[in-house]
Length: 138
Image 1 (cartoon, rainbow, N blue to C red):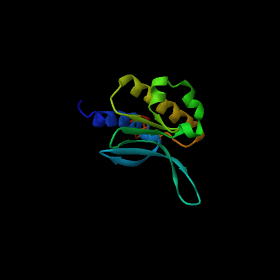
Image 2 (cartoon, rainbow, N blue to C red; image 1 turned 180 degrees about the vertical axis):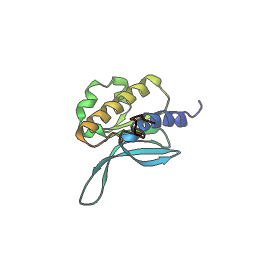
Image 3 (cartoon, one colour; image 1 turned 90 degrees about the horizontal axis):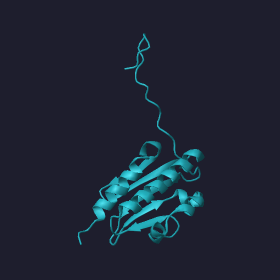
Image 4 (tube, helix red, strand yellow; image 1 turned 90 degrees about the vertical axis):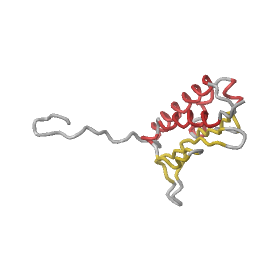
């Protein structure tokens, strides 16, 4: 069987990358991608994580941090995705299963919505272009 880790990594990376404009990119490397929130602990400057994906020796690991703050996100995951769980918010993949990756994507998106409501993720500023004296947007 061909090593599917790079394809799995790329798929999950794209799931997270969709939320990058509202987050802070902490790592963007060939085998590691992670996003932080805008929430920073004042006493030591620690930036809280949103999520990450990383190629490990025996699997590809995806961390979905919103489930720690919003455990209700896990109440609707399928038994198949739950089997991929390692701990509270880590999901490990050895093979590319489109259905499970789609479900993971839904979990990441729901987590992003929770973090946006909490103020941990912020939408990027709106770019309305330049407005000339006639009111036309360019």
